[in-house]
Amino acid sequence: MKESNLKIRLYEERGPTSTFIDIEVDTDGNLVMSGQDLGKAPSEYWGDSDYEYWIVVKKEQRDLLLLSLIQEMFGGSHDAFSRFREFLIERGIRYDFDSWA
Image 1 (tube, rainbow, N blue to C red):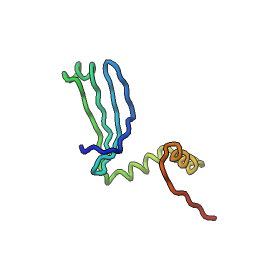
Image 2 (cartoon, rainbow, N blue to C red):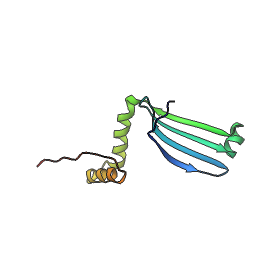
Image 3 (cartoon, rainbow, N blue to C red):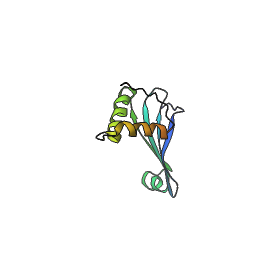
Image 4 (tube, rainbow, N blue to C red):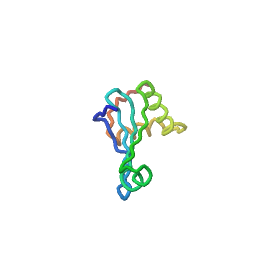
């Protein structure tokens, strides 16, 4: 897997077993969700101090995933447009807006 600078930490828990889950777009344009468990649980189960796992959505399927996630988050709501725009603003995602009457 080729790493990129476009990476977000989704989950982090530190303890006897530490868990980290990240999502990124790799340099080939694939969406990669990866996880790593460190410490007690992987040592007891696998006999190693860490366990790594990942899901790769190839770049050819990335747009379908994006649209499916937007449908899941905003679909079925009369205020989907406004909520989507608020979502973009809250996360500092630049966008263009236009209207016509």
